[in-house]
Length: 269
Image (cartoon, rainbow, N blue to C red; front, side):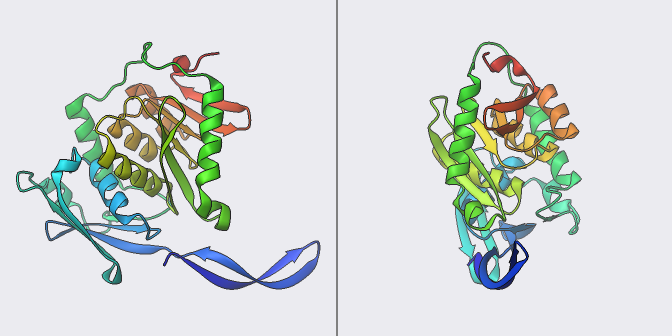
C-alpha cells in the first residue's frame, strides 16, 4: 500500500472546508544481495523488482539481466532479496560502504561512495557518446514525448507527490514509464524494466520530471541513453557530466520551449 486518505482543511477564496485527500506513503526498503545488506532505499513501495534491478545496474553490480538469479520481494519485512548468478562476484567495495552512506533518501539521491562506484564502471567502459550524426530529432519530438510522459504519470496527477521517468524509442513510442517520490528512484525503476527487455539503450531517449542533477545524468550515462530531457532545470553537476560524456541534456521542456544545456547538435532546427 503506497497511498492513503487523510483529512485536510482546504481553503479556497477564504472559504474553509473539511475534505479527504490522497497522500503517498514512503517506505524504507532494504536491498539484500547474496544474503548481505547492500542498501536501504526510501521509496514508493511499488515496482520494487524494477527498482532493485535498476539500482544494481546503475551502480555496476550487474551488467545484464542474466547476472540475476532470483529476486524476491518480502513486503512485510521491507526487503528485496537478490541472488546473483553463481559466476558473478559481488564487488567488495559495495559492502565496505558505511551504513549511513548506504541509506538513499528521496532528496539528495545517492551518496558519494555510490557515485564513485558508478564512475569506476564508466571509467572501465570509457563511456562517452559520439555526438556525430547517429541521432537527429526535431524539437517537436521532445515536446511530444514529454507530454506523453506527463499523461502517463497517473500517481502524480492524483497526488502531486512524486516524480516520473520514461523511455521512448526514436519513433516516439513509450516503452516504459515509472513513478516514485525520488526522481532517481523513478529513473532506476524505468531502467530496471527496460533492462529486462533490452540490452542496448543507445537508440532510446530518457525523460524525467525531476531536476537534472549529477546523479540523474550519471544513471543516464551508465545506461547509455544519448539524450536526457526533463520538465525541470539542470544543475551544474549534471551539465558538467553531460558535456564530458557526450549526452544531449535538455531541461525546462514546457509547451513549445526547452533549454538545451549540452550537445545541442542532436536537435534539428
